[in-house]
Amino acid sequence: MSERRIRVLLAKPGLDGHDRGAKVVAHALKEAGMEVIYTGLHQTVPSIVKQAMQEGVDVIGLSIMSGAHVPICRKLMSMVKKEGIGDVLVLVGGVIPNKDIPILNDLGVKGTFPGGTRFEEITAFIKENVRH
Image (cartoon, rainbow, N blue to C red; front, side):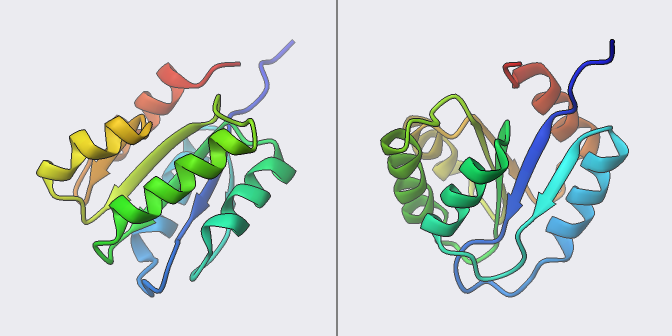
């Protein structure tokens, strides 16, 4: 019997209107055998958490280019804990300065992938860290 495919919710929170990177990552994850739900642009944190719960995803991936990654992740991680879906793997990609990575880790973000990260690194990280 084949193993269930990893389900990934890929979201663009906030006002950032650049989603080419998110679409390319979504394609790479699909090529790696994952099921990807892409929410589109301008998502709110509550809508991302709600969609993650409705879809029963293993991973929430945020693509953030606006520089608002710390407050967005602080709010998202708080809602994830409150809603009882803390076992979901939360990842962030985009324009993320190295100095902010420890802050994101402290908030509970498990993986941070600045622009230019190789797709193989992202897919391997997800496959190694998703709990089935």
